[in-house]
Image (cartoon, rainbow, N blue to C red; front, side, top):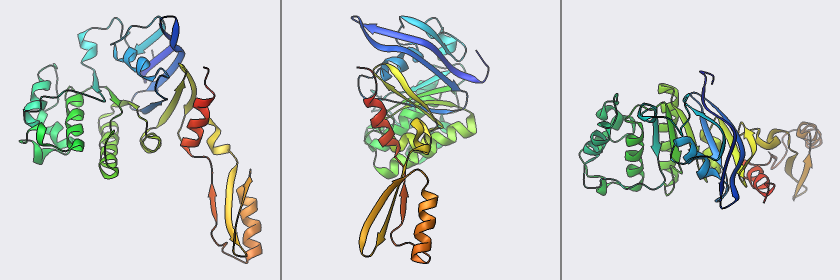
Length: 284
């Protein structure tokens, strides 16, 4: 495995009662990348991530996470990963500081708990019981617990479920800073397409146990080359046209209107459009 690679998967398969939950998945995640794995419920997303975390055995295929096979890796390897689950049971009667310090004791080289609390923006709440925090603040505690062991690789499972828009964007800033300042590799699963587009360096979509697309969110599934929809107002009416080259049409409209074109917009398929198309094309 390359030193630049945090995760390398080849031909991963997992079956339940003869049905393939994961059917020949290949993945490569470079170190320091924020990588989003997207897919509908039952697509094989959770099974794949649990195999990478070492919590589920595979049937076949090759898996290397931080240079080791999760199926056989020991405690030292596990100390290199952090996990923030979608639903966690916390020690709600402890304070934020007590909770983070408690989990820090499980690791050989943890980060300073107070530094971690500051990183997730909870210094002012350090002496507050976890049970008194808002949903967004409790999620920050979850992240603090996930990173206090100073992980090289962080798994985030639906991290902003239930967040309001402002809290979600604050959380994105936190995850970006972890990757930028600490070089932490992040593997994110989310149902929020906007989250994947804003946060991830790269996205893979899994459907029916297979990866159906993998790439930059801006170009995934041929998105950048897709036909553009050009809309404008003319003679009091809304008009639109789908074209391969919007520049030529815009030049024509600009000349016709003698300058600015009223109501002019140019749009290409959104990540959600591409996602819905791709999961519909997965094998059933």
